[in-house]
Length: 366
Ligand SMILES: [Fe+2]
Ligand SMILES: [Fe+2]
Image (cartoon, rainbow, N blue to C red; front, side, top):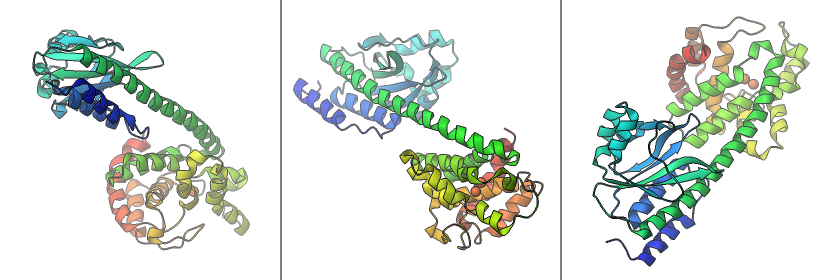
C-alpha cells in the first residue's frame, strides 16, 4: 500500500508548491512523473506526451520505459487514447495503439517496453480549452485504482495545465517579439541587396558552433537572437555609403564602424534584448584587441560574442559584397585558420572550421 492519504497529499503539494516557470516543459514533466510515482508507488511507469504544432504527440518525459520511447510518436488524428480533465483508465494500451497505428510504431513500442503495461490512467493537459498534452500513469501489474488516485491525477492535470499554459504564453510572447525583430532585420537587409539573409545565416552558423561547443539551450538561444540582431545598427548608415563600391572616406568609415554602438542604442529600450547587448555592441572586437568599439582583448570578449564573430566573418567572406566576389568555402576556412589567434579565439576557431565545413552547403543552399 502507498502512504496514508494525508501524507501523500502533503507530499504532492510540496512537490508542486515551488514550480519555477523558468523550468523547461521536459523538466516539469519529469517532476510530474517523479511526484506521481512517488505518492502512488503502485504505478511504476509513466509518460508525459506533449502535442507540438505539427499535431503530433511526443514524450516530453518518461519513467519505467527504455529511452526508445523518445521515438514513439502519434498524430492527433491516429491517437486512440482520449483524455479529459477527469482521469480515464485503459487496460493493455499497447494493443489499443497497435490497432490504431497499423504496425507503424511496432518496433519502437516493443523496444520501449509498452507491451508490458497492463493499466494506464490518462489525464489531459489543456491550454485555452484545447488539449495539448497527456499524462500517463502506468503499471506493469493489473492493479486496482482507488478514487483517491484519480483525485490526485485530476489535481496534477490542473497544475500541469497551469504550467504548460504559462509556457505557451511565454512562447507566444516570444514569437511576437520575434516578429518585431524580424521586421527590423528585414528592413535592414532590404536596404543592402548584398546582405540579404546575412543575419539568419550568421545565426544558424553560430548556433551550430555553440551546440558543438556544448553550450546549454539558454546560451544557444541568446546566440541565435544576438546574431539575428547583431547588425541592426546598420540602419543608421545612409544607403549610399552602405552600397558604395569604392573606398570609403575616413568619415564614412567611422560611420560604418559606429554600427555596433548605434545598434546597442537602438535596442536599449527593449529590456528583453538586454542579454544580447554584448553581441550587438562587441561583434567587431578582435582576439588581439585591435577590434572596435571597445578594443576588448582575448577573454575580455564574452564567449558567445567570440562565436558570433567567427560566424559573421565567415558569412561575409562567403557572400558577394558590393566591392568583391565571394570566397570559396575552402578559401574562407583557410582565412579563419590564418586569422585565429589574431582576429578569432583560436580554440573556438578550431571547432568552428569543422562545423562550418559541414553545415555550409546546407545553410547556404537553403
Ligand atoms: Fe557588423
Ligand atoms: Fe554582420
